[in-house]
Amino acid sequence: MAFGLSLSCAAGEDDETGCAIGSEGCACTNGGACDAPLVCLSDLCVDPNSSPGGGGSGSGGNPSTGGNGTGAQGGGTGAFNAGGGGGGECALGGCKAIDVLFALDGSGSMAEEINALSVNDSFTAIIDALAAINCGDIDYRIGVTDDNDGGFKVPSGWTGADPWFDSTSMTKEEIAAAFKGAADQVVAGSGTDVGCEHVLTSSRDLLNGDATGFLRPEALLVLIMVTDVDDYGAYDQANGNDCGIGCPVTPPYTPNAMYETFVALKGGEPKGVAAIVVAGDPNVAGGTNFCGQPGTCCSGGIDCLVFHADRLWAFAGMQNGANGYTANLCAGAQTVPTAVETAFTSNIDLACEEFEPPM
Image (cartoon, rainbow, N blue to C red; front, side, top):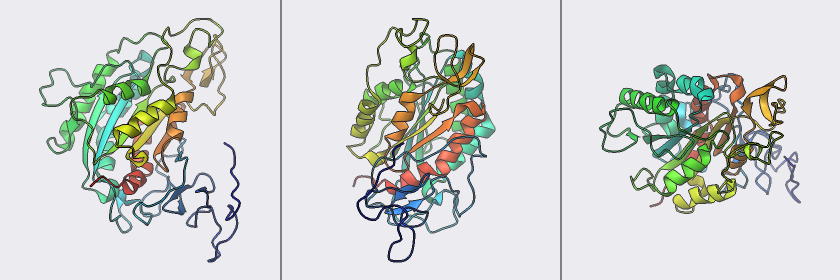
């Protein structure tokens, strides 16, 4: 990333109180910047990865996380508080409803990761973290889709009124069981052509054309994408690798165009959209496979376990303020539930506090 210089109040200078501008707990620069990895929230630099009440990070050192905001913060609730776990005064405003869409890569190489996410103990902990956002009492919905425009996934034999799972009509245990059943449908296979996986594009197409009423104006939209490849990756195009093979489909949208679609679905409010990406960090040069395709973790030039997710990382980086969260899948299958839970207790908690639902 490039460092931006402000003509006044540059990072490192002291304000009138003696607090170093850009450092944790101090004012942001005039351009809304802070020292990495801090983010600017209500004109103060805060650590999006600190746990509620002032503890350490909940990531266990595995996921690579960060708030990938691109602009200055303004308005909002007026004071920082990671309210998901208590330990401080709760925000007076912010969201009280969250719509969560999981887009999961259904290729065989992702079965272990999806199983780690959907096992009862892991997903119950994720639900607890979600329900506790912004000091709790969150009304949430959870939907599941795949990487190949498969629509909402539900358990086999599902008889629910909607193809997603709602906290107002289902218990935590029922939602965890339903998610496991839906995830199993993804693991069973999505029929995606090799190299054509597209969790982000599938999410965009599903929500943009949805007639089920999944999205609510008052709810923060959280997109969770889990994959070991990119979304229609450039290296998966026939002219993007040494083998001359790949996906016959040209990416229909740029990450920026998809971001603009999601913002439009939220009434033009960027603070209403957030993203959690668990995939291959493109900033890690882990080698290449035998076709020269770049990976985050590879083995001796033969194959890679996880490939670079350039488009997904770019999408996360477009999110407002702390609304983007990324984690490197190479840390292992358990990274997936850990990253999602950590994101809920940090970045997404902040995003919820900053999002003021329309009146």
